[in-house]
Amino acid sequence: MNAQDIQARFAPQGLDHPAERLGPWRFLRTLIRNPLETWPRALFEERSMRLDFAGRPLLFVMDPAAVDDVLVGKADIFPKAPIVQRAIGAAVGTKSIFTAEGADWRWQRRASSPPFRHGTILGFVPAFAEAAEATARDLAGKGQGTVDIAEAMMKTTFDVIVETMLSGRGGFDIERFGTEITRYFDTIGWVAAYAVLGLPQWVPYPGRKGARAGNGFLRKEMARVVAERRAHPGEVPDLLDFMIAAKDPETGRAMTDAELADNLLTFVVAGHETTALALTWAIWLTANAPEVERKVLDEVASVAGDGPIEASHVEALVYCKQVIQEAMRLYPPAPLIPRISTEATTLGEDQIFANMPVYVPVYAIHRHKRLWDEPEAFAPERFRPDLARALHRGAYLPFGAGPRICIGAAFAQIEAVVIFATLMRAVRFTPIPDHRPMPTTRLTLRPEGGMPMTVARR
Ligand code: HEM
Image (cartoon, rainbow, N blue to C red; front, side, top):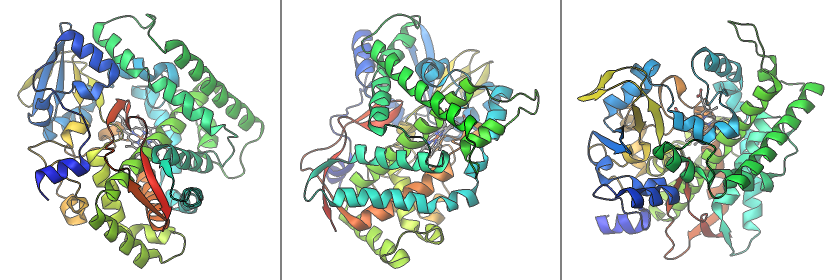
């Protein structure tokens, strides 16, 4: 495939990373619209890049060894950057599993880990397959209609998270939930711009009131679920039961209702939106690559025939897994991992001083010219198991790395493979001619305006 072909089939439309630094006003305007558009081309070519915002220096690291230092080797001196608290602290609390640090974080991580063991995850495969089959029936029933695949995937993975982590006992209004999360996420560009300018959190911005109101709704919903569960514990413990029962080994204390609600919201949001996006991009990329689609269909037919995808099939769906991995390389659902140094140190040749923000731009590392052959091409063969083993941990990190690596990584990968295999076999997805999605960063990497595609029963 030549470069033009690759560009036309898989590259983001209209996303032209600036060759030069943007002037301050253009930078802020672009940051508010779509932070990804402010990323200079150098991020895709250099080992690291220092930028100064309003007199404050910030280092982007792209060199895999330095990335590994930040997230793994020197993780102790690189906690999450304050922008994380600022962007999501209002939504999920400042001391939840995602936002806490040190001992505060460690025991919450331990308390939440039982549902994420490999054997337990395999027990969830029927729930993954059923959610996908329900979506397939729904999509196939649309005739030759146009559907927003992003929305369909959000609904599917939301069903999964409620079914697996809350024993199906949420009683949530899924549509309202999605609307409120989006309303909150849509203001993230403003939050980032204000953080760059050093403005205090109380300064108003467009959409702030709506975002707060929406967040109030989400938190109330979580508080309701916690109260109901305290009154009626589950027979077979799920994530919420484990968190209720957990005690901090150092202090002996359990989580308060507010902490439980914060963590529950973290899991529901972190656990469905990201996987839905991985699936959305994987379906779109595959629909643009008939040779990949053929291989997927052959593999699913030979592994599972016409029957439901089962736990015993997961290992054998090797190529489907490669497609998901490659989709997360090109369109990582979490495109940026922000950290800050607590003391002076070095990263490769870069001198780092205390309180210097150090960002890991996953999206740029995954398309870096020094790290990948034809970085823009969609080539699931890159993740053939023998080749994938040779990849540097700091060069491919859709789930992060080190102690704060995604707790749901294995869950998400198995879930995505099962849903992808089930949907591809049942539904033909066709891209809308001339529509190429524009990725926007709203914490996660979403296609602007959704992902419209034509669907038909296979
Ligand atoms: C394709 C799907 C997913 C992607 C790409 C993804 C990505 C990530 C990344 C990059 C981080 C690390 C952030 C950092 O170091 O700053 C993270 C953390 C986290 N993820 Fe995921 N995630 C996915 C699915 C899930 C699922 C299914 C769950 C739960 C059911 C989940 C729950 C969490 C939690 C609780 C954390 C915080 C962990 C901690 O700090 O100890 N994620 N995720």
